[in-house]
Image (cartoon, rainbow, N blue to C red; front, side):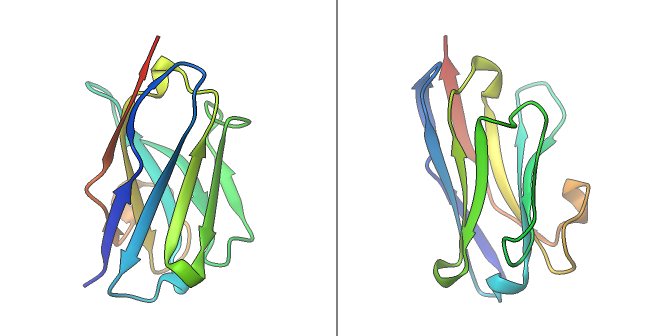
Length: 123
């Protein structure tokens, strides 16, 4: 069974930075497309970023483009989300997800996901 564990969340002031990590175990990480989702309190979960299995193709939500970067290190079985210029509206639980069949649109189309890590941005 594939396990995904996020880390790196915390409390940061607006304008600050955080780097989230998602470590995978129990599967073939290098064959998975990966994604980061977030869900703010009282709001729907939204896709933040995706990355292909090789890292050759990435996508970012318009709300984070220019501020966030998704990357992966297949040798370390880890995907990252570098978050810069954080805003209070970035406050959410961030979860990573893995797909065995490439990048998917919706959270529920992914095969595995982690428990999430809280990111709180104060104003």
